[in-house]
Length: 161
Image (cartoon, rainbow, N blue to C red; front, side, top):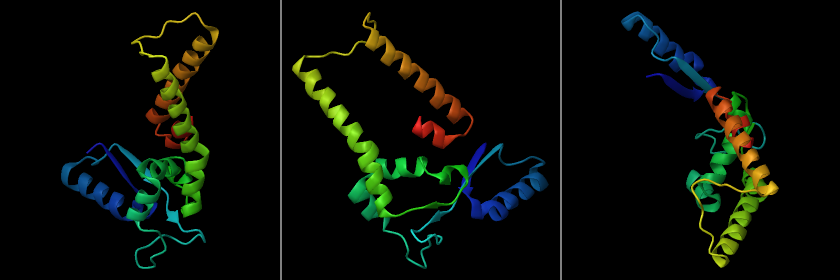
């Protein structure tokens, strides 16, 4: 196993135990990289827990908002930087409104007019139009930023690039 991911509460339990056992039994660490996520809290700042039942059922969240909105909310929250983050329905509504509706409307607009004009994408875009060149340049810059951030385990900056 080369990588591992767990919540902050597991640091003293799982990571420590695995490290001690790996070194004691095999004379090497069982992992090279550890990514620690933060803790998810409810709207009032209390740790989400099964016993308290202070979170919406996952099926309900996925049915009402979809997995993409839930993933986006998590990936753009401080939890991926090992910090505490609050989770409640209004955040899902905001992510949907501020990111996904804009994205979906953009895709719908493009698809509508691409069909009207019988647009066929090319493998490589070659254009003399200054706006096309600018868009392609921005896309290449975005790709570089996303990969640099992911290679450095900086998930939030990669997600919001």
